[in-house]
Image 1 (cartoon, rainbow, N blue to C red):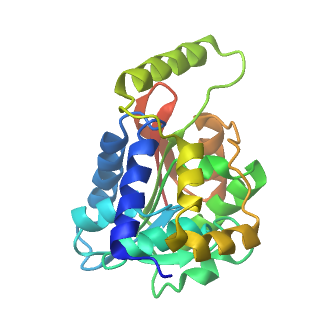
Image 2 (cartoon, rainbow, N blue to C red):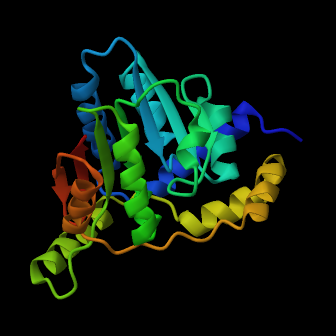
Length: 252
């Protein structure tokens, strides 16, 4: 049984709802990411944007809608999320299966020119420190001079930093106030999706790849900035922040 467009739309809508439990001001953050990319690509006839760790294409699809002259390539290693994205957003976004930060991952993208921007939303924190360093180095070689990396994620403060502890509390309280009605969370979404017969093939592929559960690498913004500068980005700083959640922009 293949994956229908209607079934993909249902699971993507449920994905969007459960993700709002975890990302503070999720839509505003997506808008900030798009603002940054729009600024850098304003004079490009046909810009190229990568979405790293794209999931089912939530951010990629918003970028494609906001930037009609952009080619958006969405990258992930999860066959289930990619299948949903291709069925639901495939007309606007090109999806690629590749492990961001893994050996040779940039060669799997099939790019015909240097990207103007790479973006990511709540994904790069899953990379171990060494993999993150390699990813930043790869991106510094890949992105055109003057292009950007825009990373929307959670960046915990250093252990023992009292201001960081207060920031985390402020973020938690805001997330509680914004939490949508309903009880579906990350684990229950995956459990329910795995029971859908139309997703049997993607889940079989997922199990074959032994995709591990994401563990936050715990790196603060300051550590990301150092890694980006060492990798070859000229500037790196947050352009939006609330609690521990931030949108970090690095200029190639």
